[in-house]
Amino acid sequence: MPELDAFDIARGTSRLLRELGYATLSEFRLSSGRRADLCAVSRRGRLVIVEVKSDLADFRADQKWPDYMSHCDAFYFAVAASFPLEVLPAESGIIVADRYTAVIRRAAPVQPIPPGRRRKETLRFALQAAHRLGDLLDPIA
Image (cartoon, rainbow, N blue to C red; front, side, top):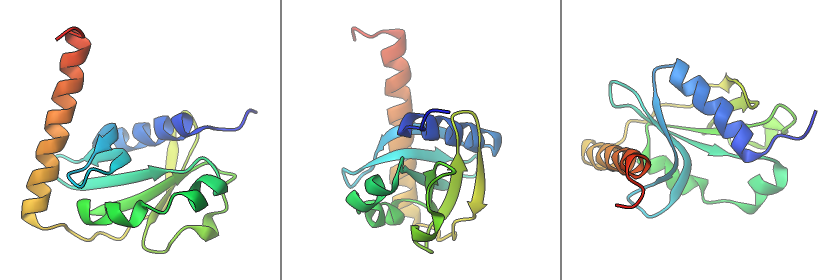
């Protein structure tokens, strides 16, 4: 079986989040300017950010993930089954995914963000989702 890439892991993770009642956006631009691989919002307004890592080198090269934690209630890494889980930080959750599905291997600690930040990020989520839908309906606009 071919090695999974970040797109495959993100796809399986998005399917899991959808099954859990979340709406997801990929490549979500946070208010800080950083870009999260996946952001998900529940019906109750819970914000989850998922950083997708396709291999160990990708994880070691990208250390921006701590910046994401103040923008969400729960933070996860999503990785393939072959990824060495023991290197992932204890303050994050772990999702193991393939291109079709995923499973939560370790639940992320929940640390609610302040109401003002929640409102700001939720509004950003809604606007980015609406713009993407609008671009699909009218790509010339």
